[in-house]
Image (cartoon, rainbow over all chains, first blue to last red; front, top):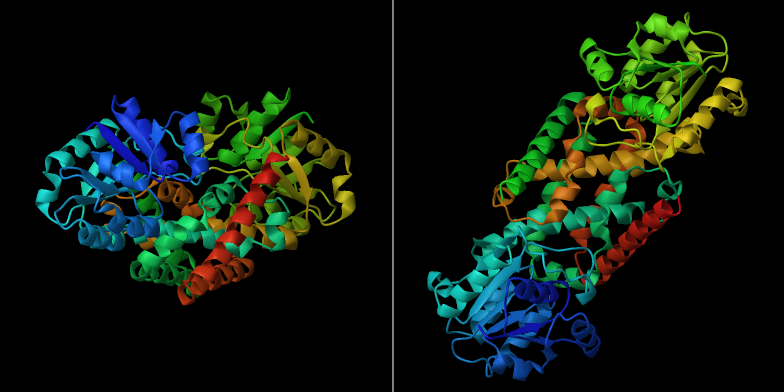
Length: 282
Length: 282
């Protein structure tokens, strides 16, 4: 792997570039992004130089698509004519069914491999990029065929992924999208809904709140621009997860008594403890 | 103030004792708690020595009630015969209407002053106590009459509160209970409901989740023993806050389109940013 092209040099794309460098990648890193982002990315030494989409697609051994989801889907058909044989196209979008479908259509020969690093921050942009963002975090891959992971280009990508600290998890796109609807998208919407419910109300203006409110509204600082595409491409599973959450809350309202609530707190504690031990064992 | 009696030497009571010491309190700190807690509190030098409730009430200039809410309410009538004239009885319970009512009944002469430090952790017990717990955090006081804050004992308590870094906020008990229903109790229940919804489901077991889920389920580790009393003594405002939250979430389900959700994300971001700037200015 001698040349890597990063499309969308933001938090994820920029962090991937920094992580590759830190892990010893000595080749060229091209950036395809807005002029402003490219200027900052060069200043911060995140990329070596800019390129047009066509130049980058033609030059790269690895094409890393880290734009918002709908942009990833829109750019793939345009790149297809330029990507070299033997090169790998992968992405870092937060939903996978729609992207993998578009990838399969644009690159029917198995040259596209869907990906989703489970690493994020509420901050955006190349300024927020950090070399250790993927360290110890699951990195989901969604091949359509088992063989997709065994091509020379995919094998090399997997090696770099491990070098940057990502933990590969192989899932089909449908399973991925259902999982993240519950673990990630519901979490975001629960935080957004909490903050939106309090917005404009007098209670938080009193200044009387504990550290819990601050913590549970951090995700509410996330930009809608990214979430627009996630909501648009994972609507069904997200609605299902939201309804399950509303059912739990409605159960609290209907039955705010000691027996029911003790059971709910016990379930919640079990889940919260189990995801913490899962993290520690990584 | 020469003798302080801490009833319930747990996270809050223990932290208050440690904070007083760090701020230069040179008098005696008595502890009234279970035998096991007393032993550990003495080992950790949180208290000087143990006392029975009656001895402590009779000896102390400041009686600091930091048990669970229902225990605070139950103990006050029993202490009333023992507390010295000129001493102050205060508490650290998370709801105030019920406690202040019980305090007024037990100490009709204005000797009782309700309090609620907005400082907490998901950990409990004297082991988790820390001298800086109150630093920079609001400390709500709920006097029934303005004069209650101006007695010599209350003035001295206020001075110590400032020395330990607490920011006094004066509210009536009804306003307090409504505020914390929205800012604190709803936050807890949103976190508990998120974790309880995921408990037993396959999605989190995949290990595929980001740091957001871990953060938003930290409160779900809280013990129900404390929350039982909070739910029992602030039921009306909590139900109202829960219903407002469910309404917001139901609005997401009914209208998961770009225009509505962009507006909701904008509201959420505004609230999340405003409580952060409120914190910084303290």
